[in-house]
Amino acid sequence: MAKPAPTGRSVAQNRRARYDYAIEDTLEAGLVLTGSEVKSLRHAQASINEAYAGPDNGKLKLFNANIPEYGQAGRFNHEPKRPRELLVHRRERDRLFGLIQREGMTLVPLSLYFNARGIAKLQLGLAKGKRKADKRETEKKRDWQREKARLMRERG
Image 1 (tube, one colour):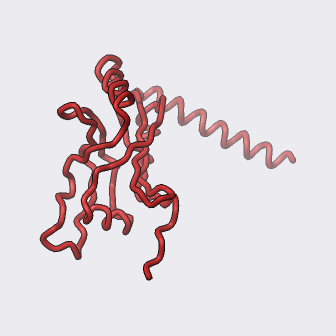
Image 2: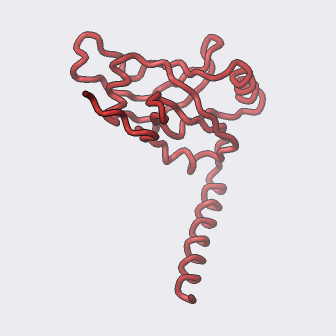
């Protein structure tokens, strides 16, 4: 008998997103995947570093996410960088479309993981791009917090 999949297992992270964007809101979306894509994800072979989400023919899709081909799928394999449909509620989708078009926000994938039931989920961040000065300010704050923690540890 096959082992059950571990719960909450992370497949891919986009660590650069929090550096390049100011994340204002997050949401969870399902993915429409083929069987070979799920098999490839279970082997933790995916990259969402250059991916983004946006509207396409009235649907929310994930573009440029790389899920490599699964070796044993043979001729039933998938295209690695094909656009994948994201599953969100209609009201949520319409709200996101409005924010993207009116306010110039971006939907950035933050992490790709399997939930407790073993279903592939994508955590999306509603983000605004940071300028160079904003990135430096964030870095200064992080350095100061690290320095402050080190000083408190030394003092007692």
